[in-house]
Length: 478
Ligand code: HEM
Image (cartoon, rainbow, N blue to C red; front, side):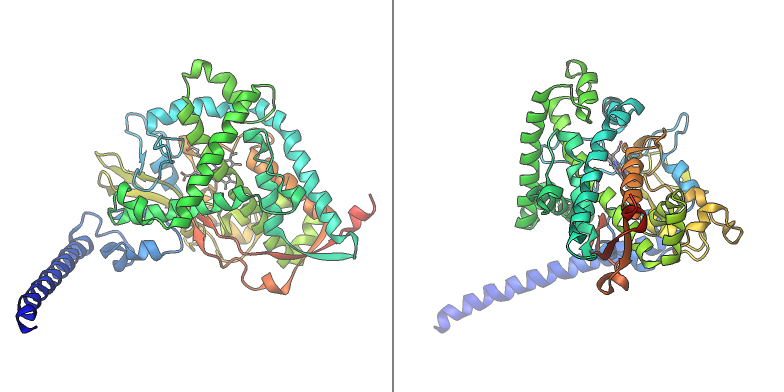
């Protein structure tokens, strides 16, 4: 026994020594990096918490993702939009940060991840789906589903004079049904009053993307990542991908006679020279992610702020255009995309908001911080739609800073600067106006206090929003 213990103990001792040395070396290395980052890095003079400069951990724990493996700068000044995402003659573009803009399953670029030239090519083709003509043609489909939503909500209160409903669910169902515009087939959520399995996969996949972004902060390779990613995320990612692939194939077979996103894209993708089949798939996958949770998020949040404040609600009921100011205010207080376009400064560096920023630094417009900062808005945490109405108390507000759909060549493709301005808004205005016109809404105790205090995985992870609905006087009289 003692003969065996001797060498075994020796091996154990040596292993322990190597393990401790490795840990000590790694800790020492991280300490040196932290000291360099905090005091000697070219970005050391930028304001911000020292701990965030020293280590990546606060970024992963922070309520929102979108950081960088190396130091990153988050800007909140209005000029940052133009400095980072605007067109500058003779300047190199700020490319998307490949470490944080995660590619799809097929490892093929889409609008979110493509480099400048490829992005331009794809956007040219995909942009046809959002032309003024295309949007007008899509409007009946949007109207149809909004009508369905209102009809279903009326059913909820038909047996009694009022009902308690979770508006997060209803708006999720609406926006997922409208995906009909991408694939030519609806998820039928409003009909079945249940989440289609695809809905859960979409939200799961968004969480998976965030998880991967967080891993990238620690230089974890894509291969290793596939082992690290929790199984349930992996499965959702895979299933979402497979379902997109199959549904897209069916939609392409239907041809170009439908008034949806795909017809103008297929019509203009002549000989497949614009986008190849893999790029179509990669983009279709992202269209579902980008176009559903976002719209549902802003709808729920606006109803929350309205239902909480009977004074604002009574103004809207009297003058519906006031709704637009409420929408702007919701976009400010609870922007759907909290951080915009994680990009890298071009190699030769750039000046942003008067600061010189070295090449390859990760930069972003931090929408949430920007809109909640006293440097941009008076009483930033208060819900004040009047600030968008030239209220003299709020003349100092930096209103131009509000860009919920981002800015420049890579802004939201769902946004169209025509009348009605953009699909997002068309859908939003119609759905909200119809809800407020048809129902008296009141907030229930369960959601009254802190519904807006939610976790964030790129977009808000919405908790149930319990609203009391009753048929409105104007709806009753029609
Ligand atoms: C309230 C609704 C919406 C908001 C607030 C919103 C916001 C945004 C933002 C901030 C970006 C930039 C993303 C980035 O930082 O990289 C973006 C991009 C994008 N959005 Fe939206 N979005 C909305 C609705 C939609 C809809 C309805 C669609 C499609 C049907 C859509 C499709 C896209 C696509 C494809 C991109 C990528 C554009 C590109 O890189 O060229 N979004 N959106």
